Image (cartoon, rainbow, N blue to C red; front, side, top):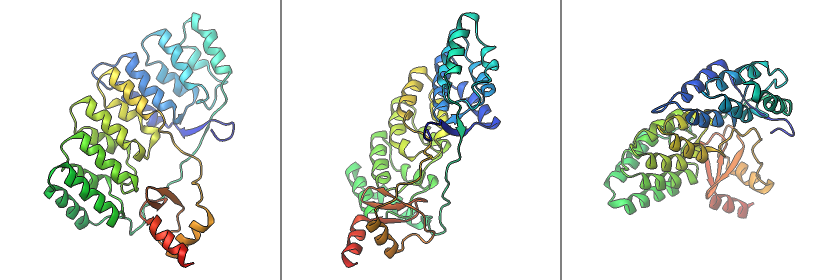
Length: 310
């Protein structure tokens, strides 16, 4: 919401076609499978009534179609022009659907703020290889986690890209350990935000749905294109797993609010340290602050030392 106005990412025709493909994914494309994908999509996109009708029409049963209209409440840019949706409805459902459409507040599209990665924001291949080798030589899970903690303390920046993270995860066999590693790295912002397609590739490493769901919960704070999270629901084959994935991702939404500004004394210390040449805003992460693009990190300890000297 932007004040009292519902907002979201504009659903382009390309995005609409992609949502339709996700709705048809799985062992069998039943209405319950489709419902989870539609629900995810409605949490971040805004649609025309014509686009909504295209998606609702994919539901097999008339009562399911009528129930689906509720998902589009306050997600329609032109709710007063609902003929394309009403045309799908059986007579017994039309009054209820008219009431939903009549009670909708027109939504408006918004664009997300993007922060390009800085020139010095890429972790060198040799540093990645060194870390991967350290993990490979470590004894047992405890040794690997100690190596992760040490790396995060001594070299939290630049963050790992998706491809670099894939190299790191190649040393981790079990999902429970991979979850611990991801949480330790993400806590300090040492992983760049990941596209849903990239996360889908990570989930594909695991055969069991339980392992995929654990990993999904671990990586959800890293999702950078929340409007496409329905793709992650479509990765799962069965309706029950899709429902679990949708529940995990329910609070993953596109954030249109400006970044919170650090208090003045923190800003002054960060400016004095001069850690982000691009001048991006800063956000708080575990143990310190990271610039909005992600490439630069300043620890709380370093900030405190700067404050003490000012």
